[in-house]
Amino acid sequence: MPPVSSPSPRAADDRCPGALRAHQAADGLLVRVRIPGGRLTTAQLGRLAQVSRRDGTGLLELTSRGNVQLRGIADAAGVDRVATALAEAGLLPSVTHERVRNIVASPLSGLDGGGDADVRPLVAAVDAALCAAGDLAQLSGRFLIALDDGRGDVTALGADLCWTAGTGALLLAGRDVGLRARIDEVADVVVAAARAFLGHRGDRRDIWRVADLPEAAPAIVAALGGAGADPVDPPRGGPTPVGPHPGDLVVAAAPLGRLSAAQADTVAALADGTVVVTPWRSVVVGGPPASTTPRLAGAGLVVDPASPWIGVTACTGRPGCGSALADVHADAAEALAAAGPPPAGALPLHWAGCDRCCGRPAGPAALLVADGSGYRVESPRGEHDGPLSERVAHARKAT
Figure 1: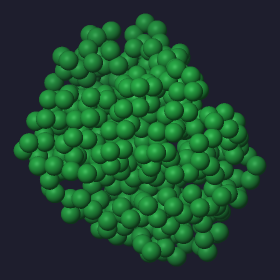
Figure 2 (figure 1 turned 60 degrees about the vertical axis):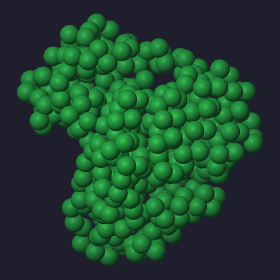
Figure 3 (figure 1 turned 120 degrees about the horizontal axis):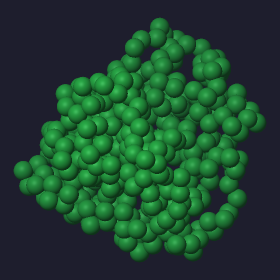
């Protein structure tokens, strides 16, 4: 395993952390583990919990791309130990491409009988093709690839490249531009599209995503031989709901995206072989709902769709982030302790420790932004929107 300080093939201004290049946070070093499609074996999840206890804070942070972060690592030697453990667990198959393996997929695909295709084999094929293309190591750690099985869940995330089953559309920055691909062509087409983006970007290292460069989408279409179909409105589904699902599955959310090592051990013990981390900071657990659901709830995970935690996210906040003006996790927990179910029609609610609003969900969301004396409300509907006002009332009581 190369040392943490090994040179990166990308520019220094691409500062997304990875498993080998840690980010220095206020509470120590942070590493981000890419998990294509969010799929982990129970052994891998157990290893992550073990490593977090040994070298970090004992928490696994679930990200909005279905990845996992470990934080509070003391020094570079600790990061090297973590990287070695990840490699041994099969979670670090590529040193050169580990930060660009950002692949999300419909979490229930192939598990619940829904969708138009099982995209699980596509995740493996796209990941392998991505890692085999040496030039694609130049992609930013923010470049996102999505594979939607037709239900429209990950389509709504606005990925740079998103293939959707049913229509076969390859969306660019969330837009249907007329590109189509058969399921057996997806891996090659995704690589070609990513390569075309890099070719058009050239030496501009400040361009990380397709949406950053208005002319990038037409250039990709031209490189792939032109649009072959009329654009249509892609399906736009919502997050995978918590609770029981067909196929002996339970979806459980980690409050504010933090899964303790003990909770991870519980999930690993209950699951029937595989766990899926979703882009909505929840986990899909295989097992009989009648016995699995109460045990997940007993471990402190959210399995009730009426829970006040549903739709609530937060950035790191104090003390982990030096820029934060508040301990957003403590404030959110205090507010939600007195809250009821999310009001009908409520927007997702994101707690932010500063104006950067890191970790905010994709799409419309209400924001509570710490300003040093409390929280400022920002909402596309206005502060006095009824459902938002009910939630904000509890937030203001907490601060």
